[in-house]
Image (cartoon, rainbow, N blue to C red; front, side, top):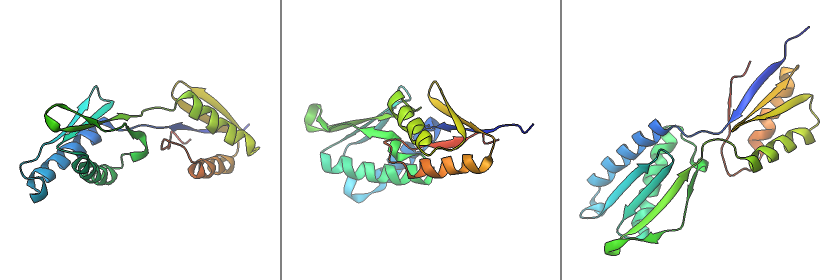
Length: 164
C-alpha cells in the first residue's frame, strides 16, 4: 500500500528578515541627500506591527519604496504587510502603521479549501490552526494543487512546506 504524500500551506513573515531590512533601509535613508534633516523612523512593535514615521506622506511613501526593495531582496512576502491610512502625529509629522500577517485566517482558509475541492482532485485538505495540510496518494495531484494556489488572488502570499 502506497504511503500518502502531503505538504503544508502556510503564510509567514520572517521577523528577523524584517528587522534586517529595517536596519538596511534606515542606514540607506540617513545617507540620502533628499532625507537630510528629515525624520526617518521605522520601528517594529510586538513582532507583528510596523510603524513608519516621517515629515510628510510623500516621504513615508519613499521610505516604504526603499523598505519594500530591501524586503524583496530578503524574500519577505510584501503581500503580508497590510498598511493602514496615514495619520498625522505630533509636531507636524506623519505616521503610518502596518500589520505583519502571519498564518492563514479562517476566511482565506475556506477560499483555499473551496478552490481545491472545486478542482475535483483526489486530495484531502485539513485546516490546522493557521496552516492547511493537503494530502493525496498521487504527487501529480499535489503539484496541480500548488499550481492552482499560485494562480489564486489572495490578500496574503502562500508558502509550501514539508513536501513529502
